[in-house]
Image (cartoon, rainbow, N blue to C red; front, side, top):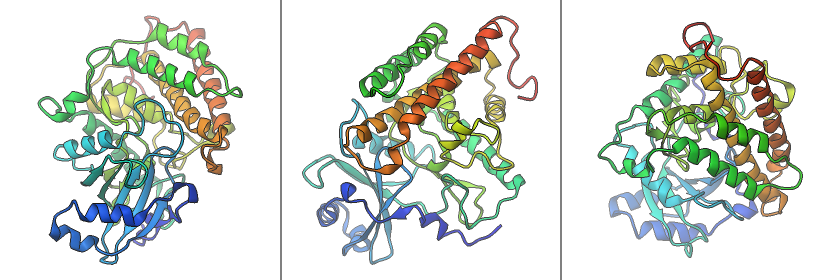
Length: 384
């Protein structure tokens, strides 16, 4: 495996788009007034600013100072935002509270909730250097199928470890809203989808009604990431099969762990998926050696001891795809109404149509098999 990975970790940092630019001097001046003198020495001078192109929600920038120190800035995108989304203060506080209990969280530096500084709230955190598996595996690294398998198993184990964090007695427990998380997620995403719906996408009415009729009770209440994807994971530069950081805590909350797993696997496009689904692949889950979705679920339930049948899993699979459609539609709404001109968002409307079709196909298949009947095979009892 090649060790020349440092450059590949920076390939996603590009020149800042005009519509995403901000007053760099205002930000750096604000920062220097709010950090201790020892730290400020490494943050003196005007940094070079680049933008990470991988995200489609909050905007992420790399600030490279003359001292050699690098920090990350996170801020909301322009345009209309759904209620509760893009809360920089919440994301900052989650990371700060979680880091003592989960070392893969990057260290935070400072939070600004004054929109007058750069036009929006923002926060800064330390940069964790290393390659990030985006649409493809890092190009400077040659993975064998065995190493890919090791990587994918370790990725699943990150989610297991996160869901095992003891949140009682910590600030994180305040994120929870009590029983009814599954129902709140269904109704919340139905409301968000309807609010962002444009005339060229479907209603998802059949899917939402099926989710309402087949929703299970909450399994448990754990800290969930809510945007768990390979391109939110930083790998070790010395051994790129080892994750060293988990990024993007914007939507983290306390909820049902299987809802988090379902949301994560909505992004997990396999090599044997249909051509339309493969077209929207955003992470390298198709490469030889990568676990399949069914293998991911099997490893997760094996590690956690959760008792789960294939029929029960169908609910979480459909919900994850519906939730992803809601995320895509919120982003596409901004493009459709010209609140952003980013050409990467042009095809998101097609993705929403494809996701509705996939949800309805899964529902039809389980209904043909008799729905959530009694003859159910437990995941882990056989190769799945």
